[in-house]
Length: 118
Length: 110
Image (tube, rainbow over all chains, first blue to last red; front, side, top):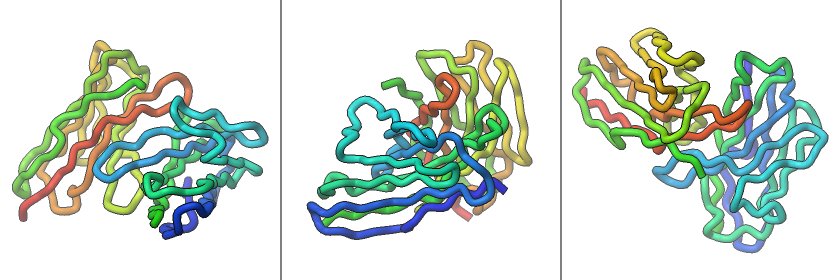
């Protein structure tokens, strides 16, 4: 149980285009989903916290107009990187926290999406 | 933002050896978590610690939550090839925000 999927697993796009990444909780409902970014050989950095039906909360330094987050249902959150540039190339990972609160608000992580912007 | 200092950054060991890594913080956390990440995948939870002083085991893994709530360590006993990966500590800030350490990259020579 507690499986989180991401789609696509990797994507290559041209500079200036927009890319949408999906995060789904497959066997549980998630009140809250989180989006992280991980650059090569670095740690995970939280970008934003997404609550179903409300606006996402962005971490300091993360541009909300560039990284659009939609959490339209209890099992799906999307991250859209708008007007992507090479410096946006990174590994994007989502996590989901169960509706029932899990055990101490545990987060279950997706497998990540590798974005490469040419 | 708040950071956790994790050490060592990398380890090269022989199969069968024990491994120890730790995390420290200037701030108190009420929950410490240890994750393992393999290439191209998301992190997987190994051990969660909820009480200061708590010592918890998961198979060959043992982790402790420091008394001061500002540190934690993870030990792996009798390492095997599948232990290879990057290990991250994380502190839970507030109800939901996770702050991650820089990671310890473990390499095992057979």
